Length: 171
Ligand code: S3P
Image (cartoon, rainbow, N blue to C red; front, top):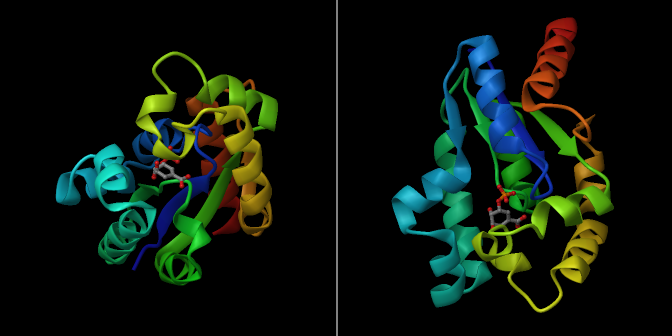
């Protein structure tokens, strides 16, 4: 069975756009876990608002179990997926986890632009800049355990080619 390619990384690191490029380069399907959650359970902002983060994480875990059953697919995951060790276990069994990164200032710029904050409930707060640095500090060590690809100053296509080269060199 050919292993999946799983993209993780903080919000705003470009997992979906890089994932789509990578799926084109490797000619395999692309799945976005946030989209799968929305299809099955409804919009993410409504899940947070009506049921809270814990409920959202349960929905997310269910989708992780579902997508991990596939093979030879590029999977872009929500930035919080790898905070659940069970999700890591399931995803590592199904494929290779790759982490996209960007420095904090770049993330603040990308995530606090017009139209960005409202679509991410964790940043839909009085001080999104502070929320970003707090979450980054909490998550840093978890993200660090995966192969990392810096996204600053590069196009999604360039990053996808770097990941493709890395995977080809490994196999
Ligand atoms: C989250 C990231 C979001 C989405 C949800 C929670 C997180 O996905 O799953 O808002 O906890 O980092 P993106 O990383 O695609 O923005």
